[in-house]
Image: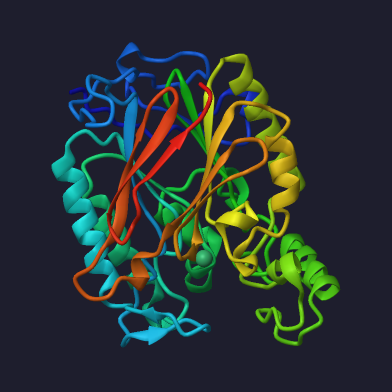
Length: 361
Ligand SMILES: [Zn+2]
């Protein structure tokens, strides 16, 4: 088995001068969008029972909403139990299992690593503590930011700490795990009232938006909002114009290269894979861009906690992951995804449901 490691790059391809891309060969000091290491078409010994002889093109670990805090167990605002101290144990067991697997090429953390209830004077240490656990994985870990991350630390501290690439504290980027696939990571809190400085134009834009859409004095409350409008709450956010254009460029390029694309965002983008309160503010706008192309096969997310799967009108799979935070003691919620040319196979542990996502190659 060929183990591939990424190198964090300081130069960006011309076409995407503002954001970073990653090649997994570790040999290309200056990454070129169209150059792939032959070793990237990686072999794996993980032969699946359902398709004997077929090996995945690559595999990666997934976990979401660890929301660790050194505080007693509690509940969400709708009464779902939360196990703030236990969640880091779930992550530790995940890392152990990912390392034992030996054929995982990287891990994606879908955001919210430390809970907003973490005492403010412990925030930095708590984020470092959880990050240290992720770093015990024998390979690259790619982080998405969530609202709870941003309650604890501002972007200018959080992003460098988690080695999230991007200029001007933006947290969107793409990953090239091999010639057949592109993974796009979206920043769902691009336009948001949390995480940016209070007088930042994006904070002001988000507050103005919320003022129009949500009449409650507590903008975290969806009370009185109907149906899909219930997503217009402060704990969500939007993908901004510039990021949408960047996404459009990536999808154009992927189409040209005949690549399949997996889109990752902390916030879900399909109403059938999420509660109405957890959706990205402008999920419709983002999906309109995605639906112009045929290359996107799956959208993966966190934030909703429950764990759901849907297939939208264009045949795109949406899978929001079960939260590590909501695992009662000695139970788990993490997994890994085996990627094939015609499907993604999510192998879940314990509370994370296994999911087969077939599509037209
Ligand atoms: Zn969240």
